[in-house]
Image 1 (tube, rainbow, N blue to C red):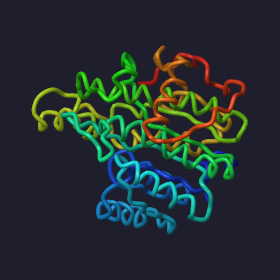
Image 2 (image 1 turned 135 degrees about the horizontal axis):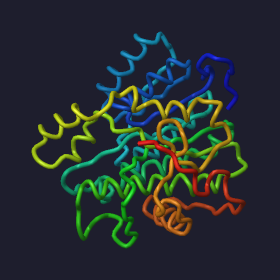
Image 3 (image 1 turned 60 degrees about the vertical axis):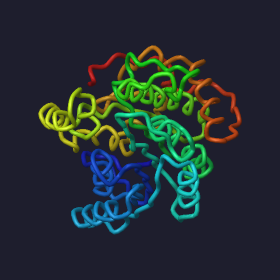
Image 4 (image 1 turned 180 degrees about the vertical axis):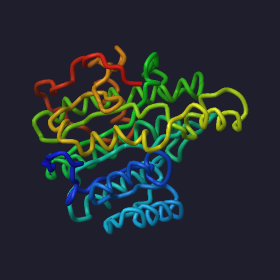
Length: 312
């Protein structure tokens, strides 16, 4: 992605960036940061009213006239497919796709497709949307796919025989497993896209004061909200690494990496298992009704174990 050099911030003028879960939290802060850099931003939101409020607020703050709203419920594969069609039909290409949306229900819930909710929103929606947009991303290259994972993936176990948590549902453990799935998806996607000009990276946003952070605290919801405010960092900090991966010339050509604090970080051993990544890809393709075609080739640069880093 050709971006301006020099001491100033990079410019995303003329570039189209899509951010999911963009009406609140880290997603909203990310959309604001990208608009500030001059990008054409498409904010994907489930609630049209809240999405329009966020879009108007970002427009008023930045003066950026190219901020669009796309409504989609990412728990519905029909909505994900409809969103992909909308994005393919709009002019201007697609240069950055940021998967930010995530959920953490306290009780096991099923989507309209009969899938466990966290699996559907946190992993299968990014998997399906990216695959449906691959041709557009390739034709827009250089392009970038950025997925918000979490350090919560460390220590997580991904049971492919019980991917929908039918035997046992522990909400934070399931969340951690979906974040592990994000890293595995990123590494396998990078391998498949090697040499196309489309890169794929994922990240830990930090310990940020969001509703999701509060759900890791046992006890009543009010206690989680209080703890989130006390220990979490601001939303702007949470968006920093996503914006960096979307815009910085320093990461041009880097792919298959896990980042924290805008630098490559060491992800878990399980997240670097290529056989697990391919098995998850195949199972995800079946669960989304998506027929994927293997594109053999050399491993993508950076897809091997990254150097240790002191990121959170």
